Length: 517
Image (cartoon, rainbow, N blue to C red; front, side, top):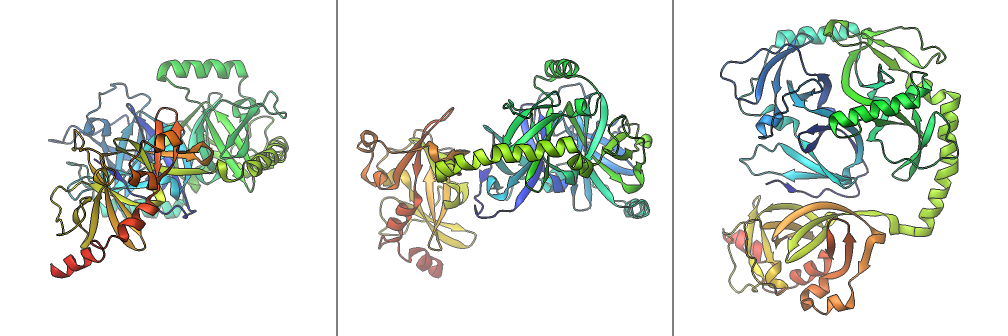
C-alpha cells in the first residue's frame, strides 16, 4: 500500500497537472512529464513475446514509442472501444512512453501544500507518486519514472533518430505545447502557457453582466470568473445546439464533457466554455500557418497548426493576448473583478480566518481521527519486530531504525487506554517531529486526506470529553462533522509530543541505543 508523506505547508510554489480517466479511476500526471496527448494510433506494430500490457510500438513523427495499456496492468476490465481513447506521451529522461487512457479530464493548478507525496518500499514499483484532494474527490498522481519502468517495456534507444529529430526541431523553430479542444464543431487550440486551469463545468452563479454569450460566473478559490460560451462568442452555433451536443455526450460517456478553460491576466480571470477538451498537442513554430480569421472576429486567431502529415484535423490556434484585449471580454473580466471580488473580500474580512482551509490526514484509532498535515513527516508500514528498550513505559512499542536513525515508537492505543484491535493488518506508523526529534505513532489504518474549513471545526462537547481517556482529553480539543465521513476527532500532536519528550525513560534512549549498536 502507498502512504502519504507531508510536505511543508508554507511552500507557495504551484504545480500543474493534467487529469485522465481510466475505468473507475481518475489519475493525474505532472504537466512537466507530458510531452503531448494524441488520439489512439491507427497503426501499431506488435512486439513478439510482449506482456499483455504492452500493445506494441507506434510511430510519432519518426520516433518509435512503446504503447502501454495501464488498465491491463492494473487488472481493469477492458472497454474494447478505442475510438475516444487518448494516449499520453510521457517523458522520463530520454525515454518516451505512450500510456492509454479512456479520455482526458482537467488541467489543475495546485499549491505544493495541496499535493501529498507518497513513499514506497524498496520492492515497490512506486506507480503512484502523490495524491491531492479536490472537490470531494482524491486524484492520484502517476510517476513518469515508474511508468517507464513497467515490466517488459522495451527501451527504444536510437540516438541517431533522436539527434535527427532534434536537428529538425531546431530548424523549424521552438517546440511548444498547446491544449486542443472543440467548440461548435471546430477544432481549436490555445497555447498551454495561456491557460491557468481547466475545470469541469460547475453550476453557474447569476451575474448581472450575463447575456446571450456570458452564461454566468463561477468562483475559483474566491476569484470571480465570468464564463463565456466560446462557440457562441465566435458565432459558431447557438445555445440550443450546444445543449443538445452536451446531452448526447453525457449519454455516451456518463458525464458532461464540457470544460471551462480559465485564462488569467494579472488580477482578472476569464472562463471559456468549450464542448470538450481533446488533447495536449506539441507543435513547432513552422507548423503554425497564417489563416483568414473567422468572420466578425478579426485578430482572435494566431494561425493554424498544420497536422496534415499525421492524419489529424488542423487546429485553429487562438491568440490569447487578443482574447484579453477584446473589448467585450475585457469588460466582462474587469467588471466581474470589480463587482464580485469586492463583495468576496468583505465577506472574508467579516469571517476572518474561519474560512481558511486546513489539510488533515485521517486515520483510524477506535474511531476516525485526524492529524494536521504539517505535523506529519511521513507514514510507514508497521514493524512488529521493534527493539524495546528496558524500563520503557508500557505505551512505548519499541525503537525503530528509520534510515540509520533510531526513533521511539508510541502505541497510541495503549497510551489512550484502548483495547487491542480485532485486526492489526492495516497498522501504520505516523512519523512526527518535535523540537528536531522524530517519533512514531502507531495507528490502526490511514484513511484519506481531507480539506477542512476552520469554520467547520467545533470544540469537543463536554459530554463527549467526559467519556474520553484522560490522556486523550489532553490532546483532543476540536472535532469536525464532515458529509460522507461523519465525526472526525482532530488530534493536536503538540501536547502529546511535549509529554513524550519529557518522559525520563525516553530521554536520550534512541541515541544511547544507536551508540551501543
